[in-house]
Amino acid sequence: MSDASQIPPAVPERTPPAAAVPGDDIPTLLVKIFGKDRPGITAGLFDTLAAYGVDVVDIEQVVTRGRITLCALVTAPTAEGTTEGELRATVHSWADSLRLQAEIISGRGDNRPRGTGRSHVTVLGHPLTAESTARIAARITGTGGNIDRIFRLAKYPVTAVEFEVSGAETGPLRTALAIEAAALGIDVAVVASGLQRRAQRLVVMDVDSTLIQDEVIELFAAHAGCEERVAEVTAAAMRGELDFEQSLHARVALLEGLDASVVDKVRAEVRLTPGARTLIRTLKLLGYQVGVVSGGFTQVTDDLKERLGLDFASANTLEVVDGRFTGRVVGEIVDRAGKARLLRRFAQEAGVPLTQTVAIGDGANDLDMLNAAGLGVAFNAKPVVREAAHTAVNVPFLDTVLYLLGITREEVEAARTHVG
Image (cartoon, rainbow, N blue to C red; front, side, top):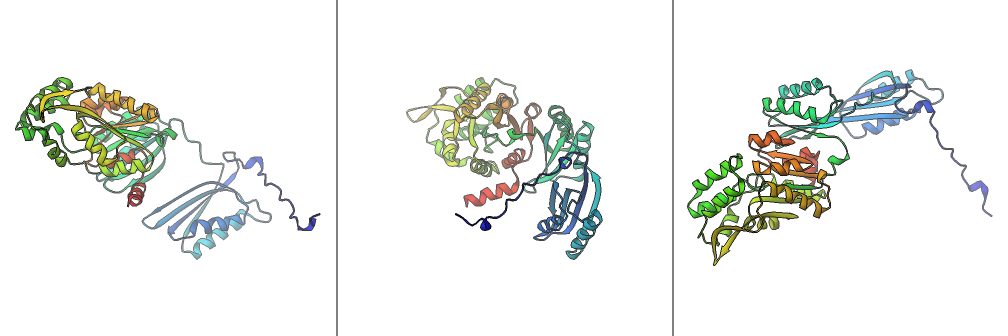
């Protein structure tokens, strides 16, 4: 039989009083600490407060240029023999010992409830000016929204900040901020808040002038001596002035007779868009699947798929007979409707709902794909595309799309380090 004296007494469960439920009209204290940051401040504050039997209702901490602002919303003292006055004196004494400033404000209850209609507003500036920030904030307020939190996502290659907004519906807020962003020359993306934002697990992008800086048909045309004629047709097609399939056949016909060995030269000439490798590498490390769809040619996209470790790739195929291009394409045509169709196919194969997909493109033939995706991003796009897409990015760095997904620059750098 065991010795009962060795059995520790049962510790009764601590049941907080019903009045202490966050949000009820109970006395609370807002404790604010600010000053030069150093290790141990957060632990020190709450160790100091622990002696007074308070419960933590909310915490917010930010460090900017080595200066800390720490806010703790706690219940009034409950420990026997303690008073609010003693808590105040102790906190001030502790702060003084660390050369910090303290402010304690009495009140009642929790923070006010956030309004319905919650959105993430991502603002990209190169640079981001005080005027732009003021006008975006004023426009949010003007739509009935309240800014609940602001934090920085990145400082390079663009300044990216995110506003958490409540009280305004996402659609009207997006429309209002798009108008303001266009006038200011900055990029603003508005997406609905919720778990779905982090669950977007398939990204599909256009190739020419999106993933790469070139138009592949023009690279081939340069070797065939018909670059100017092809460029004219390409520009008209991207503006939506020509039917894509007709323009495709017209441009490809100009390549008739060109030696197919030129494919290796064209692959070597392709220039990735700045940030393309970082975008793909980061997405892959975070568990995303990534694909491309192109009105260009498999002779190039198959190589890109292998080089970049893409999960999906689809494009048109130039017909080759006896080692030369025939001036025709074979197989399924990847046009405007085809890109949207392929997005759906990739999503099905990846096991990802269409609402959790992201599409990126720049031309009119990308519009169906951008509108079909959960989030459509117009990247340095033509005006007709910017106006129709969910959001636009007008800086020449493809990895800025990561910030629209709520991925910070620190996470990007961590991915870079992980890869080595």
